[in-house]
Length: 110
Length: 113
Image (cartoon, rainbow over all chains, first blue to last red; front, side, top):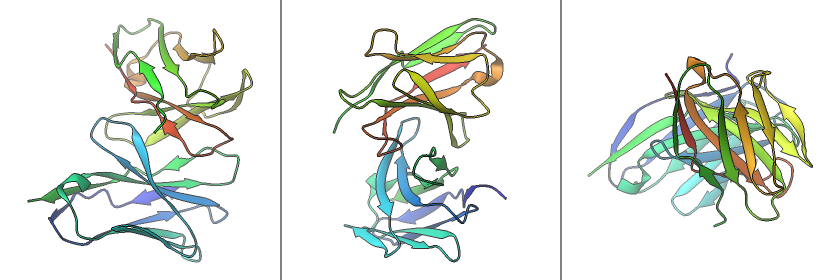
C-alpha cells in the first residue's frame, strides 16, 4: 500500500462549484498532516495544516479522520485561480521527512 | 513571505557529467533539505542537513550525491556522475526548526541527456 494515496483526477469543475479531495495514509502513527498546492512546474506551497478537530481557512476546509487514516480538503466557491495540483502531505513523526502524495489535479473552468 | 533562491533554473548535462545545484536559504533558517520530483511523479525526500552534517537521507541519496554549505551561506547538491534517471526537478527547502514549515525554492529542472 502506498504511503500517501490520492485520486489523481483531473477534477474539472465550473467556477463557483464545491469540490472535495480525499487522501489516505498508511502509517497509523503519523502525527502531522498538510495540504500543499503546486502550480504546473512550480514549487509546492503550504496551503494549510490539518488538525484533528478540522480547520477552515476562508473557502478551504480540511478534515482529518485518524481512525480511517483519511484526510480531506473541501474548496467552496471555486475560482479560476484555484486550478492547480493539490498535494496531501503526511509527517510520520516530529523529526521525520514529509511524505507527499502524487497530488490531485484541479481545473476550474469559466 | 521569505524566499529560498535556487540556481540555475534549468540545467542540461550529458550522462556521466557532474552537476552542482545551488540554493540560497532564508537567513537564520538553519535546517536544509533537498527534494526531487520526476515529471508526473510525487515529490520525494532526498536529504536533510543541519549543523554542517547530514541528519537524514533517503534510499535515493546514494554515493553519487553529496551536499555541503561551502561558504556558510549557499547550500549545494552535487551529483557526481549523472544518469538519465536523475532527470527531475530538484527543490531546495529550508526551515527554522527540524521539519518545521517548509519553504521551497523555485526548483532546478535537471535534464540528463
